[in-house]
Length: 418
Image (cartoon, rainbow, N blue to C red; front, side, top):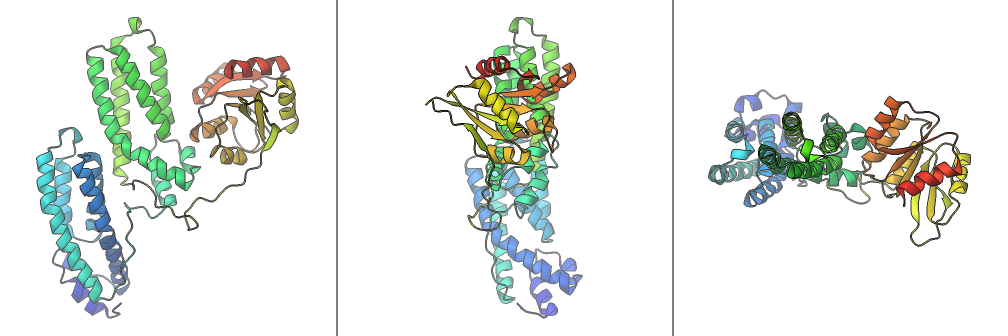
């Protein structure tokens, strides 16, 4: 690369679309960093343009505007102020995705993208003259890796932070695809809920709320999912639904989902992570210390995961069940439990309230955060009604109160694993 900053500035000043005063005022260090950033941005643009064009062909306006936001952010950082202003103006005009005009989008992109093609072609020429080695093109949207993406996701208050923290890179990549699908799904669900509520088609309202709850569970928006489920349970009897009360909830709920949708879109996250086996950022296999208490020799044996600090207690449970219908697995630490659940899906959990290193309430939230939906039985010395309600809200299906008897264990397990 040319070491003379004066020559470098002269080359950059030939780019008429970049603010000249900003270039002139750069120190040598700032200039070097700017050229490197320019190189990375120019290399990423063709992939970003392809994604945007593909989304436009499919009339996926959520993704179209997401990529425009990404490109716009890059233009602002490049000090290409004229392009950034045009893009800002277009994005502001089309901030209501329900009223996007296809003709307007097509006209703008037919003008804007060819202009950017010429702009980046000029940048490539300048970078070649400056002997800057071309950067490896990557499809990025502002985050350099999984840790940065997790930090961004943790700013969305509706998402369960513990779920985000424990995701492997592969799970995070899949999660990003789920996030990207949400804004478009939400628009369809919002329209369906409003129209069904208006004509008092309560059956369809509850069906839609059930679908929304499933989506929110995938998003790890735990509190919103719980609100949704509580409302469904309150309105099981369609003949006694109070319309005004349901309407208030739907309006509040849709407002909350709208804010979640805006937060997701505003983060400009990539559609997925670029993962490479054996390279930095790829998930590493985790060794998990588990004890097979009973192999479950029956062909239809159900798996029960016992999470308890006392191996003696685990053996008591094993003896209480006393048959070959269940595969019993014992784990004594939170870390091993969460690592095991990344790849396994037990049919039933038996979790002890007194667990070392973590609050049992948090542990159950972490279990649900791994996507586990199997029933959870909590073993406890004594549970007050308010505490019991809290546990039930985060996913506990039943309780076994100590001292535990074989009859208690058999009764509860048979109830949830008939």
